[in-house]
Length: 274
Ligand code: NDP
Image (cartoon, rainbow, N blue to C red):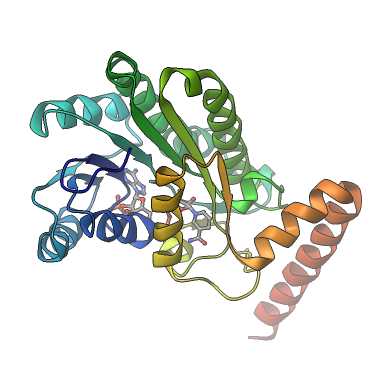
């Protein structure tokens, strides 16, 4: 599927972190890129580096994927400006940390739209093109949290679980039509994600061990496309968590809950001390 000097790639959330790294990884294969995010200056910076790395053409489009329908628009624009699309990477996303009772239905709708629904819109817009050519590849950047639920991240978990379900179901549907689907489940990655995430007051974000470099995730995405991998798990902690969830699900969620409740109590005590 990945053809050096030919492939056309759409990446959402390409202005920083994993999306930015993915843009660089595909630039090494001289791919044409269509990059989407809200911050135009950041996109321009990434585009410049991609051109230096060897990408022959890079289009940057400022879009807010929290607006319903934008996922469709970006695919239509990509098909028009790049005259095609080979690999669609649904990566844009953010987190919300806090007790579910403090997170409004509007906040849930927004995170759902950005993390899941905009990706679904893009996939739905790209599928007729992929199916008519009997080739194409869809990448969904989910999370280890899409495999193992974590208390105080319920809305984020819901979007990431949904991506895993969608990706695995489509993998089975589309395989015989020549269209690949890969779900990527990174663990903690050193990006702007923690800063960008919405935190309810006093809520500490969840950190599970040392964060990996986003380039590690980008290279795994390239491999997943090349080898048509269904699901990729990254970081040792993430892999262990998924294994424990499969072997001892009840014990795993109880242990995570105990650790997180303890961390929240410590944070509250620290805050009171100040
Ligand atoms: P970053 O915050 O660095 O990147 C998020 C990207 O999404 C940015 O380019 C941002 O661009 C874009 N984005 C956010 N909201 C919108 C919006 N409304 N419209 C358009 N684009 C938007 O974090 P990561 O690179 O870490 O996150 C990428 C993906 O990886 C996410 O889906 C995340 O859930 C997943 N992930 C991250 C992990 C981590 O530890 N970092 C672990 C597991 C999964 P802009 O702000 O310019 O719009």
